[in-house]
Image: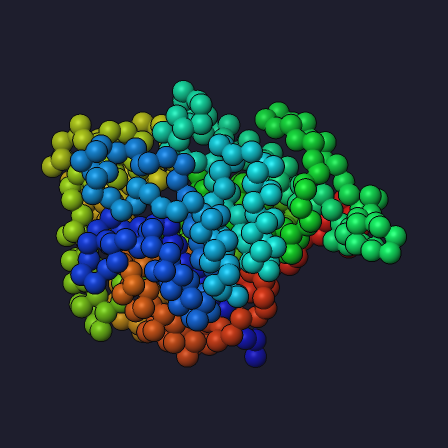
Length: 442
């Protein structure tokens, strides 16, 4: 009898909770984003529960919302990811450490060095979340007057990926002979100069750091537009995505894995991990009351600002008690806009109601007992809606403790989540192969 499929679990930890009201919830740590002792404790709790990874998204600008909303939001700022994850690598031994690196506002040589360094420092636990950056205000922080067009951002990202992975392959795994007697530190025949000249990038190479422990850090991708899905199919080994329901998740799963097959990749070499906001209670009713109390802490100014960001248009000008008007496309995130519009149409929400939903968290949520949450996760896994989840905690530390202490043991009891790590690297624990070097035979 075949063993049951195994859930993969990541934890979305930037900011410490995505819910705008989280920092105000009774018992929450209001300073969690900038308190290293708290973040270290969270990481160690996740590792004790055998989570795959601590996933840290990043913003390249303070959120583009009015000051009356911004001043109320704990999501505006956080630590720089590499600094934090490098520190956490010394406080953990198995937990994966995934950081966002922008292909629009960073240089591929910088990205390649940082992730290679993190992979070595952590003993092979780094992952790169490839993003094209949707916030148009980020352009203003990098000497640009306007944001690069959406389609162009993805074309640049595809070339960027080729350059970064090529730089990681600059050295054969055994290039550094360190022959003390003959005074030879590395074998020149095992060093490759990339010499890339493309439409968007020109990078000579080689990278001045040895090939990462994992060959390449695990490649994570988060886009859900058509361009994002295609980039994922061609490059990603894990996908952080937002899906509203199981049927929508199943469609996404089949589409992206089908695209993988068309480009000659093994669909098992990608783990699709949708974001899942989890609220645990002793009863389903108690969990719903906890969620309602959390949502009540969101100020309307934050709610309408969150809606504006999702739509890429100023929603404060809309009639708050009327239906959502027709929204033209913008240069912001296309998938975020589509999800907000679909939610409004599906549930016939007014602008005010939609804003309040988005101001807290509007995506996939599992609100219930440990048993009902495990039921939902198991159904998603067994019906090919996902390979696991990127868990979002409602507030910290309580929401994390609820999941670790109550949901994880239920998943383990069912035999669909590990009790021990499979290996020491993120690739081993996700069941992903180590990539070969394109320039040198292994």
